[in-house]
Length: 284
Image (cartoon, rainbow, N blue to C red; front, side):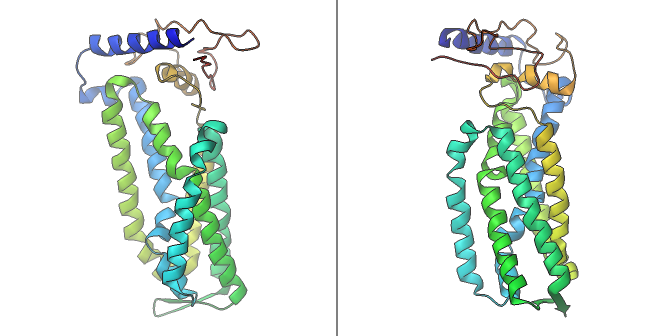
């Protein structure tokens, strides 16, 4: 119940205080460095899957299609905002992992479509892109909006939630800061490379984010679900996913953690360290 959850939070705080102050070396050893790798991968993939190709260079793309770039870019940003709102409900209803998988697939498909249409119906002269088919141009515009909507409800907000909840209390602030730095590194890379890719490859450049979206699908399938898992139990599901036994020598280990006394409806314990997708049931 709620009382056992509060007790777990207090125990976790006491363990954190007893282990002394945070050292930078703590971030690069044991379980923490593996979790940090997961967080950095998530934040980098959030950007290299291609969202800033449209947020930053949408007007250039629309203009090359002979369309009203300003109006379409305004509509695109409105779609990005509105499509983010359902995530407030979806993230707890369907879980983080489901949103990441669906969003990555939803970004992969339009990226492939734009790359194929661009290579077939595009002509490029003096760095300027011209699409030879109005139907292909319309399909590219629809694909851009479809991509942005799928990003907005999934990888946009979900990566921040996931990164905020997977790290041990003692190093959480520093780890989240490093993953955020990785996100901005991705922003810099995309903003620097996109103009060069569009100039040299035209819309065929979208095959590159398509490849990263495929990586994002596979990575999201590997991630454990964290919906409903107490922050104090994150080490258990990730140790199971990493295929690593818990041990007292590993930073942040909770080998002495006692699972809540509450049980699921089928009588099984609410906490199971052997399950890679373990969730904790709470009754408040």
